[in-house]
Length: 496
Image (cartoon, rainbow, N blue to C red; front, top):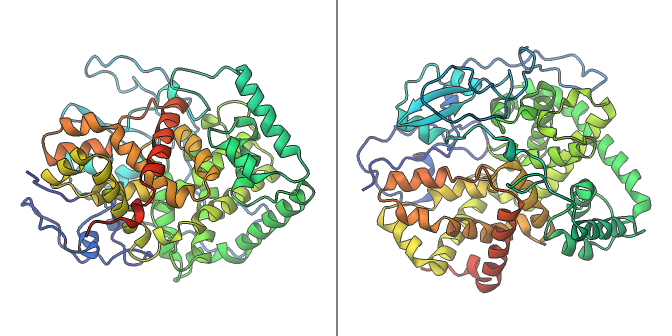
């Protein structure tokens, strides 16, 4: 029986587009009345990653600069932090309480705090802990607010690899790479042929240029590419000069404040994203996108969508694993190009799913409803099991749609997944539905073994994918492809 079905995955900040006023009393321990509308449900829930930061009134807006420095780096600086410490990727067996330094923190910027809770270790970043200093929360609420994330082991690096270890270039891999290089070197790249070869994964060496082409950012004509890249990059930094100084204005300060809070939470266990230089890049990208798209503005979750593009375009200049790479060591022009390309490709992605982020997020509502209907046809046992324990699809699938499964999968798996999404004509807006359905059915055995509402919800919010690699993602995509052609009418086949 459900005891408390408040699931924290909806921000209540009336000053941020797409949010509802914070005027609803907290739910009690009695079973909540089932919401009769999406708006009622939204008013009674928070985000799954929300740590009551709407109560944090200590946020200080940066000093308004008279002009942007020539380097166009952000004038708002993250408070100085100690030098980065090397990450310890060796995980020792758990033999009970041990010294605090058993696991070195991934970075000095993000200090992990471990709290024993019902035999599990809750990992939180220092920024999240600071936001929670004035709030006393129960252990259960903490677990719901911040899903348990283990320290990322060596096999869970961002780099292209299967969970079994680093890849070895096979004859087939070399043949595929040669095919990509041939297509990309043609005077006019055949996009249909490029999509066909990209569906099963893009080699790392050619992924940056392939993503630019598949997203529509780069023209297929080779002679025009350099000119277009220069024009679009200059245009982006023109936006920075024109708009970024207004982030502290009354009109935009709440949007910037929310972005500033969310950035440190973006992949907090990966050192790359805790570097001040990288966080400033993300702040600029998200702020410029928000003010150029007032219909939606910034909505929590969009920050995650920058990371795959940033990592892929950074890998073009980095031979080793990028997760510990010091971005500030790159030439300034290179940093600027990575930032501008990430902005434009993220913009192209969001252009196709912007109704996910407009007021009340109708795109996500429709996709969650479509997922419910699709699962009811694919696996009636799971569907009826959710009904039996009063689990609403919105309580777990909202995040799946809002973040494109990025909070459920390691980043390296997201990058592989997006190879296929960009190869599909409507990968992010349509094919993602079938991937979510296949992802849910993947955990059928574990779902049916749960015997209460809380157990089901905790499982769906903490699915163990940390060791997933290309092989697992490939099987997931194959199943999604099968479902797409077996149930192609799913989005329009709602049961009344």
